[in-house]
Image: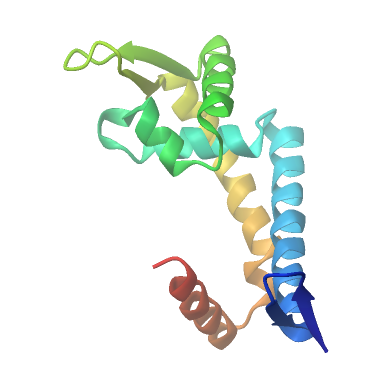
Length: 152
């Protein structure tokens, strides 16, 4: 069976569509589970964990807000609101970029680094339970190969 989209004539097989829908469901299921575990164990949303991780992996634990927005799965306005919240919690600070008065850095605080370190075992355990633990070594290699074709 083939699914066709109106006047454009674009077609996709039922099998292709099923793979796409399954990929979406897997992504939602895994992220919901990780989110729940992080919230319960550390009062930390998955998006917050992602921001803290990006900052911790950056030189001097800082990134320009524009660069941070490109690395996380949030809109610029969504990132601004999230960084506002993380700043209120003392996990992130904002600093002015002296080379560009309009630019701002998001900087991981010591409190943010501690919170991230506490949450990381929960995050890693969740990834193992929800995803990696279901794949054997060869399946993992094939999965990595396939995903690297999609996102080189």
